[in-house]
Length: 122
Image 1 (cartoon, helix red, strand yellow):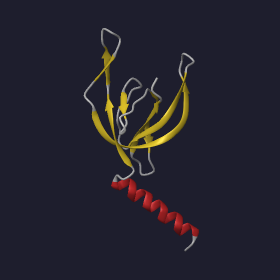
Image 2 (tube, helix red, strand yellow; image 1 turned 90 degrees about the horizontal axis):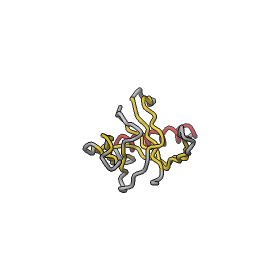
Image 3 (tube, helix red, strand yellow; image 1 turned 135 degrees about the vertical axis):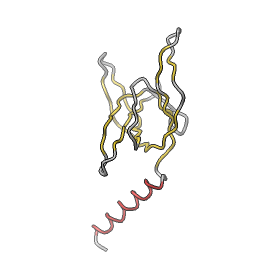
Image 4 (cartoon, one colour; image 1 turned 30 degrees about the vertical axis):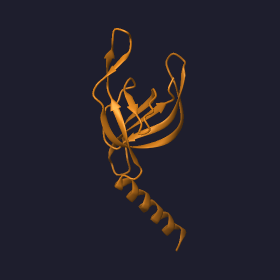
């Protein structure tokens, strides 16, 4: 078996596993609505999605000069509208500020995806 055959079979296995949902986890997206009288964020109804969650080593500087570090990237395999004030809850129940949202990412098969980078809880 040639090296190219081994690589092809590995890629085929990864695609099959991803398509079967074995690598996907359930995340919850809550859209920011407003801040209440106490300045606390209020959110809309939670919506569950199957998404690919991967480690991220990414940092993003805000306009105020604060550097936020992402701990994971959540890839939604569909076109979802996400704002930086929205809240994503991971399968383990943890959450954190959204550091960056990449909308309109196109996968190899032409599917529109959204990648949200979740930071550490402050």
